[in-house]
Image (cartoon, rainbow, N blue to C red; front, side):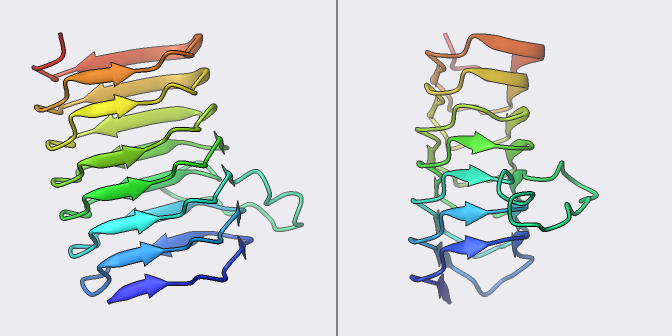
Length: 178
């Protein structure tokens, strides 16, 4: 089943997809405002996620007059994508700011992770993506922490504009990184 909402422009709170065994693709081509968290979890047949116009996650919630939700798993305004075992494509190419954390982990088939415009996030955790060969976060300038871990096929990490890591930088268990 495809979840396609071609005219959805705004979600003032959270956008949560999963757990689900029936959704195979998510397309939100007009979504520009997400006030809360984007959580995609335990979606066993999800292959593609595309939100190509989304510019910021979490930053609009206060402007929209919506009280912050305190997630048990993430800071308000986080992007959490995990346990979608057949997800191959994740396009967040227009997102420039994630108010909270970016966590992409445990995606067995992910081949394409598009984060072309991401400038700012709190903690960035990219872990256990066995099929990912390149991680390009060239627009990223500042993070609290950055962890790139447990990716056996990863050969490239590019973060050309990263100038500040406030707490920790960990790149480990990626045997093909030179």
